[in-house]
Amino acid sequence: MACGTAVVVSPMDGIADIVATAEAGRILADVTPSGLALVIRELLAPPPSRAATRLYAEQFDWQSTTDGQLRCSTNLGTALESPARSHARSLMPQDTLVDLAITGDAVRPGALAYR
Figure 1 (cartoon, rainbow, N blue to C red):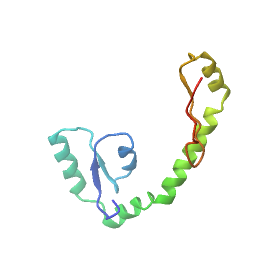
Figure 2: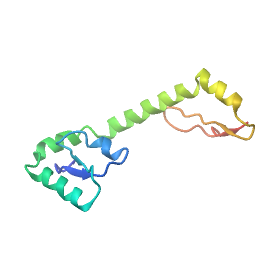
Figure 3: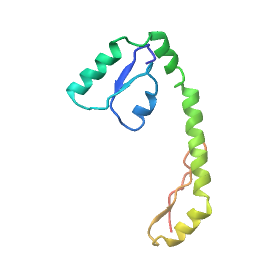
Figure 4: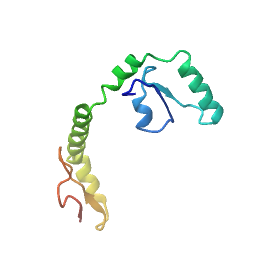
């Protein structure tokens, strides 16, 4: 997409999420040779403009990707400190892995702990 070429992707988590507009490409619904041929014909008749595909791809730069990862880590850290988590920990067997603390920038050394 960064080169202005729309893509055809299989419906996999994460990959299919990136192809969210016609300018980005198509998600293969029927994962067969005939399904692939159909989607390629649709994509090429007429294809999206290279400029539109390139513009769509520009939202996936390193800074926005890093910002998204930091937000995800922060949200996870907040969820790990919730009262529901404390209650769930009290119900786990003694040898269960119970703590994985993630900060906004790294996994803290020793974050994995057994009770």
